[in-house]
Length: 343
Image: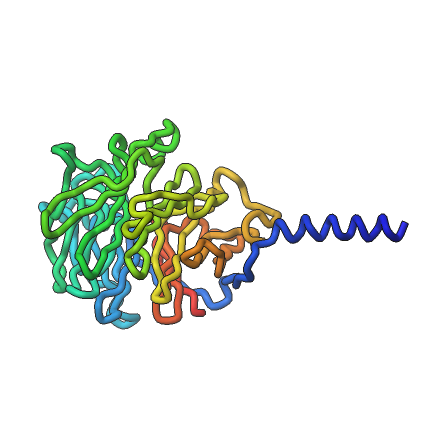
């Protein structure tokens, strides 16, 4: 009987070991959380960026503007906009997605630390660049082979070469119709590359189901791209013996949105909770947390940290997790605030 009990104990220990991540990780909760409210009316700080002096954050919002946080005394100020002919009477303060093709919808944001210029992936107006003083954008790329982009989403920049890597979520559906891309099984998403020397756009990956976040490795040898509809993140080598080989980086249980590299070379992937479809979870489902809304990976795909949304409305819709100056800055495509967690 004793031998039987020990055998069972050994068997269950194997089960527990196999269901536990191989490496230890840290769970980030909302103990040190606060919010920075956006100006009245606008919503959706999808992506977060800090300039070459570390100032900000800068966020793109629902009415097509880029806003800069100037601290609690000055609040948010307008830095730039993405529509070249933006009618303020229609656009300012808008949360109506039917005006997005007129007003613009800035999604991916990234400053080039070498030039201090802000690069923007706007869902309707393409790949844009804005000087350090803000204002009107310069359109870098709006089409490929004569076909206009439909839904630019995220980007990253190689600060040495100036090459921009960005995603076109769908060649069929615009951003305001994004649920149709999921519902129809659309696989026209692409990972693209813009070369500032040749001004050419090339396709690195295609046939992606809702191409989303993209992040370049610290040494620029590979990049990660999220395929939201399949809950996957892929790894694409850019140089070396494996150049342009693709492998699965991780399979998730929730769709990844934006991916941001940290100063240490790790990656934060924001996870959309899908609570509206799944209901609040009552048992651990991913990395032993009840409500994972963000996960930090090392370059090998090992989990280092997990952000726990704790099942409440605060972090129910997460588009980005940006690590900066000892804080996590949380973006959302629908919320009216930027979340901040002190580490």
